[in-house]
Image (cartoon, rainbow, N blue to C red; front, side, top):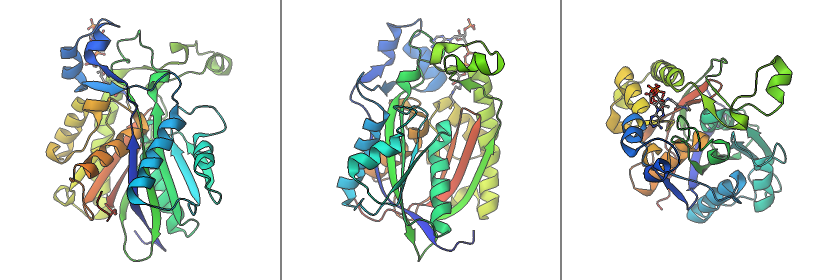
Length: 332
Ligand code: COA
């Protein structure tokens, strides 16, 4: 990749709500059981926001951790990009609420909705804007309160989702190149939906299904994800002129552990190289990748210079993958 300036991740933070919803708890709510859930998804528990806790609260906590942990100045951040599919309001956006909370007076603010691929789309934008010389310091945040759009009487979906947020700081670096390859793609057929009350019927006569909560064809989404991500891995390696052996860590969206296993099997990626957050946090949509990265940093597994492949995919259907060198030099 030829670039004018380079972008580098220099700090990371995350947050999950205190309340935990276990498989045993779900057994009391719908006709399911721990064995079925673990066997089909690998999920053991998820964190669920309190009634008065919303996506912006989670995102602010993640940014606060990033700030306190790395002692970084936020007053010269020039853009805040928030990936979310569960904003507090249509507007003000979550990025505006973060800007206000931290008083980032020089920052532009934009939310993007690329569902579970939102974080990788956010990095794609941040890298491009920094490389083009338009920005120097971008906060990329991914946060979700999936529990607010989950129907807890539908056993097909309520076992899957959880809440959380992650944040990274992406800064201009004139010395070294950190981002090495990107791929994006879309299959706009859907497969997983949240219809807005009233609008779907008005638009094309589609009856309102799900009453504003998630509905999906789980089997089709599963198959699409395995097929798409496996070929995306190949494209990324070709673009960067690398092989699977060159990748230190693979961080796919944490939708389902079985899905990650199938992607690894089909692509040849060793399962031992994967970082995931799905077992303890469920599917946290756009937040799942930064949550997995933050845990790996905290556990001392992910180190400066490691070559990491991230792959986000989800509703839309849309997907975005990238290869980067891990850029955080400060220990925590
Ligand atoms: N507990 C027990 N049984 C359940 C259940 C639950 N929570 N949910 C569904 N079932 C039942 C179904 O009713 C069905 O019963 P039937 O055979 O009597 O009709 C049976 O289990 C099989 O259902 P199916 O939907 O075919 O299961 P599956 O093996 O495809 O697993 C998912 C379901 C949702 C776990 C799986 O399809 C999946 O993870 N898909 C991807 C979804 C996803 O990740 N979406 C987000 C993308 S970002």
